[in-house]
Image 1 (cartoon, one colour):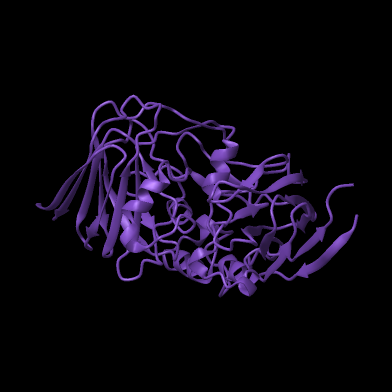
Image 2 (tube, rainbow over the protein chains, first blue to last red; image 1 turned 135 degrees about the vertical axis):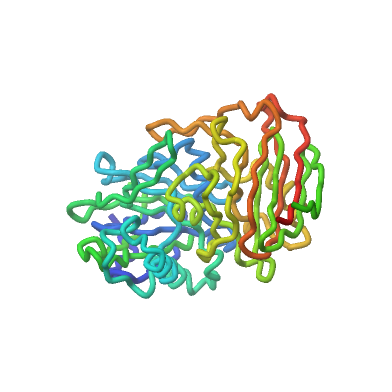
Amino acid sequence: MKVISDEFVPANTGWGAPMKKGQVLRLTAKSIIDFACINLNNLNERFDQARTKVYNMKLWITTGDVLYSKLNNPMMTIVEDQFAGLGYHDLQYGMCSGPRYARAKEEGRLNQYHHGDNIPIPDHGCWENLTDGFRKWNVPPELIPSPLNIFQHVDIDTSTGQIQHTPTRPEEPIYVDFRAEMDLAVAASACPDLAAPEFGQPIQAMIYEGGV
Amino acid sequence: MNVINEAAVSPQKGWMGNVDQGQILRISGRSVIDFNAFKREDIREYFDTARTRIYNLNMYPTAGHRLFSKQNNPMMQIIEDGFSGVGLHDLQSGHGCAEGMLSVLAPLEITYEDLPDPLGFFRNLDITREGRIRPKPKGPLTDVSIDLKAEIDLVCAIMNCPAAETSASGADAFITILQP
């Protein structure tokens, strides 16, 4: 394995890097990673939750599934998913953020999103972190795409549509490998959870040469 | 309630217009109607499918749910849903006819890349317990309406976008703006 870069990303911070078509991104953690990618040769072409769900014709994606852009082009393929069998990655949530936490607290709904009502909340979250991760490409916050929420296992009742937070996470750090299908800017946010600190953990972001 | 504005929208055509805070936007029809909304004083704040799903903690928008912006502010509330019990509105898919919506939104100068995902009224997706998404080509058989109350001043837009496989393709959609 020829490693291009291997970086430690502290809890509640963002990370970003360019990568070449064919390279593989390995994201390792035991708590949620919000992840998004952008076409390096057209910074307006971004990962898109809706296109990804409809192309794969499913709500949950895993090994073999493809991340699509708004312009309907394949951006990355999941080549290994160690969360398979343990839980599903999420394509329903947006990104948590300082204002998102503040609203949940103001409305007395922290318990619906997190792990209790009377919990410490961070002043920033994944939206700010992903904006930071993409900073060198000057992506404004309102254009940060809704992400793939890695290791965010959510209960969805597909008959009623009800979406429910769960505490299901990896017990130990595990990884997901994504092969780039075009030259990309990629960014990841390490979960900001303060209420259950074991859920707000750092991540390891490695890029390596794909192929044999 | 006073009728402020009315419009008929042919298939493959769209409509864009202002809806003021407190006014009610009534959308009627029997084909898939893709919907977008923007905050009038700053269109960088727009209706967002993910924020809306998670604010309501539900994938299927219906009466009582609120439409939220990317910036996490309330934009509209669904106050009546004539499709309830008939089928499900769609917060999963992208635009069915994106180019059409882009021409409707031309005065806002929005590019394809920046076009926010829509709320697909009357799309009636079938999602299995395993999370498989299957097309369900059965829209409403007769016209149904959905009423949305604006919580801020908005620019709203629809595309009457009948899916090719839908039996209801070819029907007009109707817009009514009501002042309570």
